[in-house]
Length: 242
Length: 397
Image (cartoon, rainbow over all chains, first blue to last red; front, side, top):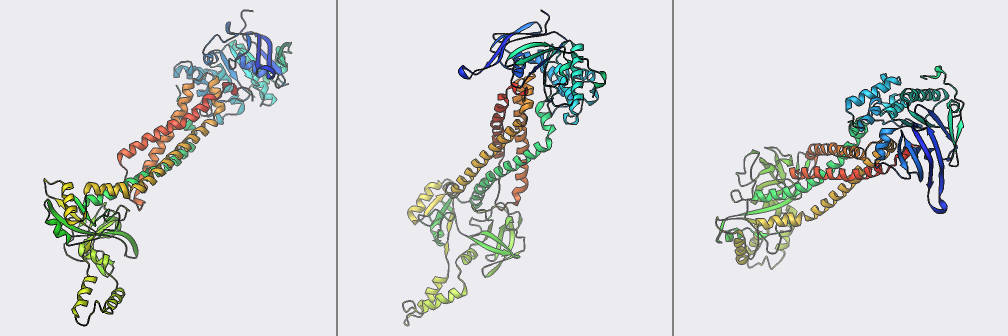
């Protein structure tokens, strides 16, 4: 149990005070092992994004404990004063849309994170190029973001999420705007990343097409998190690179 | 480290440049307004400088020829020369009028002076000074007159024999110098019909035309139609004499008003141009406010269109100083390009203005400083907006 990349215990989050208080998370607990991809399901307003924001050190939980990569980062209060550095060094984010910086090219979008971590430009660019190569878009490295297709942009976003070798990736509906083939392609990539880099990945999704891919699922309903067994259906190779 | 501001500007350089150009034209207008004011001051001072007078003697209790009508007999000059401390005294007459040259109408300030007694042009850029007692003139080159041109004024033609530069009235009209007698004639000479009517009126009055004294009418007519009045007398003081003391003596003995050159400058700049100065000052203040608002809105809008990206940048760990630095650098870039464009615009369009526009280096430096400060202030709204974006807004929705 000590080897979990993400461990959340009794996490709660309440918005507002008194009569108008809304309990978005009610003593939620979950665990994700390194190299594992788990799904997080739930209807709109069930608390998925709140849980992701709490784990991602973006908003303050109301109570509970969060451990990332074996370190307690939240225990009824943040254990770090620099949550921005915590996000930068330990967590990768993937969003519904790539949200790349439009005025940087693909390589620079990825290299920005290592640069922010203090690495030299040359090292950061080398690392970015490695990742783009690994994700099959090295030939698009110097292209402007607007010149890339949606799938290529999502790959750049994944490369950016991996740029600082985070032990954790939080993906917020990464397949939402994609058709089923592209959605499967992205999921295939995430599984590869998890396998190759040992990254723990939580994928928030509504997408019925990808839900059967998860071996383990968490479902949120009215702030209550429950674990469910998934089908763990394999991704067929022909969906790769769509 | 990647320079985010540079990359953002390069990405939308056309739009950024267009914004900067627009801002530059606004800065150009602001600089022009400042230049117009400086030009008015410079014009006023140039005319005073050219007069090379220590004391301006004018009609009693008036502010002198540029501020209100001043008329005094030209023989006062001899009385002035008799006073201790007076080295030289020269009569001058000023008159603003329209003249035509080759079908083109030009508004000028006619300055009549006695060559050798002061009040003439300080230097010439072409031609020669006035040497004949009549029908020659020296014109500022802004009149558009050329050497040898014959300019018809009232009843006579005047030949342009010399050109001068940078001499305008405080109202901006180019100055044309001519002999005093000619100026007096132009100023006071009536048309033939008016003279005929006046002569008939005098002849019909038995008091002026008594049968017992036929010479009286001729004497009255001679006095009526001759003009011996001037607008001011310019006095040079002998070395060792104090201009203020000499002016006080003039006022005491000749019952005229005398201003030292310093006092005349104060009247011209402090009173005549004061209204224009306040007006231009207000314009400048409004333009500065408008510029600030436009830069602030531009920077704010530029930031607003990038809020999602800024949220993502914050989410992935970009420090606030990098984001604030990006916005500040973009604002300063706008100001820098805008200022260069504005300065170039003023330089190129100033000669097209009918008014004299003077850009002093100190004004240019001040404008650069003000633009810099405006840009910093204007970027604060954008920076504030950017720093208030919660990184959480990158997730969900």
